[in-house]
Length: 482
Ligand code: SF4
Image 1 (cartoon, protein in one colour):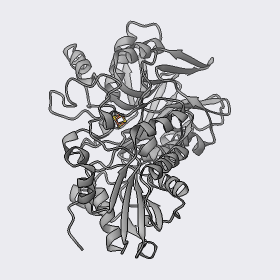
Image 2 (image 1 turned 180 degrees about the vertical axis):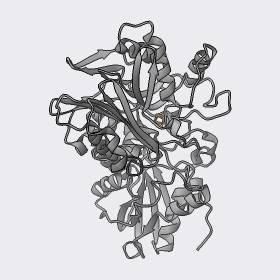
Image 3 (image 1 turned 90 degrees about the vertical axis):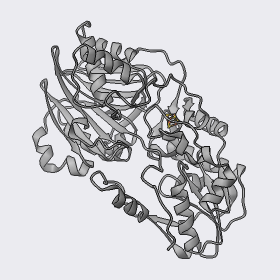
Image 4 (image 1 turned 90 degrees about the horizontal axis):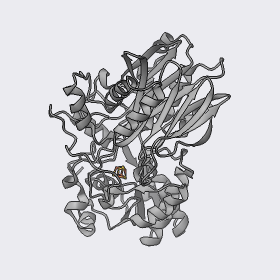
């Protein structure tokens, strides 16, 4: 075995959260149980913590902790809900930082002068530091660095000047900037808000007469709910005893759904806006085959998110699709409490090659992105060791060159391989015979079929919204946690 140094921990784009909410109109529904099932479907969006808060006659009961859904929301933990309650909100969280504490787990349950609420959030508030400073100077004391706690504080502050909770949420949404899809439960209402750019997905569905909201539609499939539509950028949805209400609180200036939702983050069986994630990833693969054709014996994907684009490449090129890698699904998901050195070793073990599939063959391998290049180097190394005669790497994302300020863990562009190497140098570093990245404009043509514009700032530097003045570090030198 050669000794490649691998930093697999930060060599993928990660997202920070999945949210879910339900307002029960059908008395037989168990909102806590449905929330847990929905969180299982959203687990790919965050594996660091999980939680549910249920509103029972104005009293909030919650279970949340660090860990996977199956570890936190056990059958015995769920007994506290007693199968009761009319409204629930639920959350899974990813954090790239070492802030694995229960106080940062969501949903947050807040008690303030006008009552109580529970809240959970997905995204990243870009004026976090300014708002937090303003609140702290007014005497606020925070228990965490989460965006959710900041939003809750702003809502509570606004509530003193507003007649209703939805007016306070509306005013809070106008005050905060950046990427946010959040869900709030008051004692009698479920409220869901998406920022005016639509950075993070949020959709609404129905189960019986009851309404549900979720980061992705795959959560609806898991509970037997029907996808109605995406929450529009700048829209607030309120569900109460009177029914479903839509309020356009801010007009979208530019549609900017995170392109990485299509590339990697979202589940292939989800609908983003009006587009199937699986279909769009296949289209990316077809485009790669047009831009970077090559003679080869098989096309394969790096599981799981490279598989759909690989199928598209195979269909377009006529080269047979074949499985080259097996992924150990039990490694790499629940690593919250594992030391870094052991994490790297476990992640390295996660992929293994089907040797007989690649030995002596020219292989096109499709992956979703290259951040630092170490993962791609590891993959090519595995294929070489297994006897592949040629390895042609195709990437269903453009070269990454810029930081993300809207909720993904891309923070230091100096470490991005495409900023330090040309494509030829990177190909050489990785050890592949050829390397090709999809063209960003072609991607935008393809995603336009999904019905909404995208953010491509980490590829182009064209930020759709203002970026933070203070670069994600507050006055305590702690990372803001999502
Ligand atoms: S900068 Fe990149 S990762 Fe961040 S929201 Fe935009 S497309 Fe997504």
